[in-house]
Image 1 (cartoon, rainbow, N blue to C red):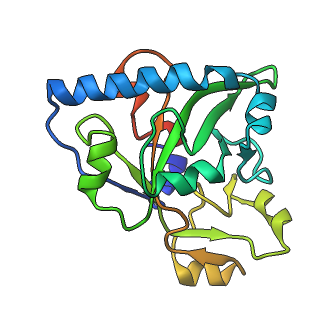
Image 2 (cartoon, helix red, strand yellow; image 1 turned 180 degrees about the vertical axis):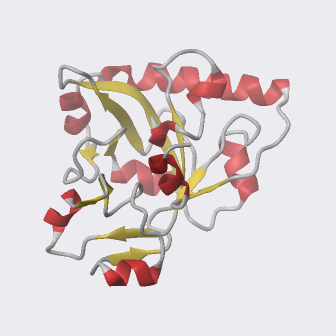
Length: 204
């Protein structure tokens, strides 16, 4: 595990794994199929933006995965689950600079019980994750997102800064739990369920 991966794990909480069942696999595969069919129309980010999706954290350059978030869908996801209406669409930037649609992200509130998470996406197939211990620039200092130390980002999910005191020392704003639970579904990166719902998509 590289230094960046180690730093990222300082900022991540994962749901526990469970033994897989054929019923879980069938349910997850159906969710993936429904999602892939529903979001294919967003291959062009312009279509996503026209439908209410906005790029999250546009100030952060060279993101591993770019999230285009629909806050209306995020609100509805707190109360019900529609596999065809994800909270965010996920894109990777290709070598030619173009955004390539790779999947989507589902969300639930911070305090959601693991059984509720399991009802949506089986925990035997997917590990939901929750971001923790973020240090971010203070309001009005967004330009600081580009700051680096020893070649690594000073702020955000890849930063070595993972405590209130360390964040205070660099003049940042500490967020113990900036977001709720989320799970990625990389439905355009193959058919293997283990990869589609893997927990490491932030890292590659």
